[in-house]
Image (cartoon, rainbow, N blue to C red; front, side):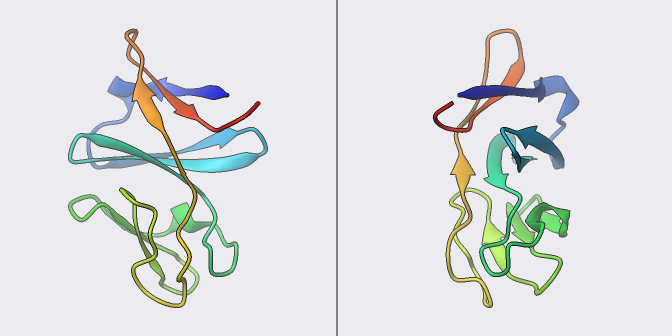
Length: 106
């Protein structure tokens, strides 16, 4: 199932938006011109990951609860206390400029 997030022009480089999707929340990031979508849930304690600081140049987000760092490109946990990757979702831009996220079966 694909969900419409927002028009690409509304997500400038170096910005993030939270997108509700099928009972969960997805963090949609744009770093270095690339789009990345991850579940807003830290794999360490299920906290709201996307509320944390993030570094657009490194394309990494830091969990606000315990400081675990994740790579937005791969979803991999880069520092403890998290060691499992965060869920990632395929993202594309349609011909009409709308960003869509594939959240799986629906």
